[in-house]
Length: 64
Image 1 (cartoon, rainbow, N blue to C red):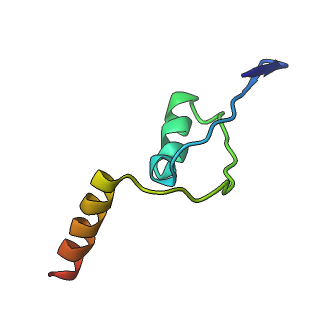
Image 2 (cartoon, rainbow, N blue to C red; image 1 turned 120 degrees about the vertical axis):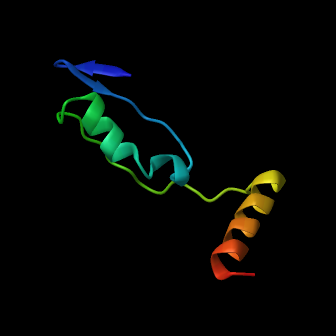
Image 3 (cartoon, rainbow, N blue to C red; image 1 turned 120 degrees about the horizontal axis):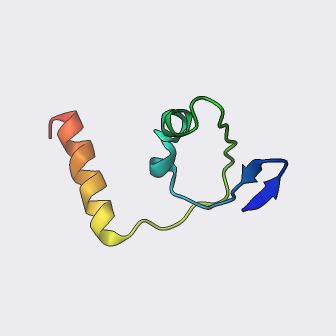
């Protein structure tokens, strides 16, 4: 984290799924003063246990 004029900058790599509610969470934590930027870094392999959960959820959504 960098401190620049009472500003805190934080860089991190996180899964996209973790970012889906981040905007609302950040607004809540900072009383509307926080902001963030997000950019794609890379694709990565999904662990086997998560693959099965994702497949089952997709099948359930399609009614299979």
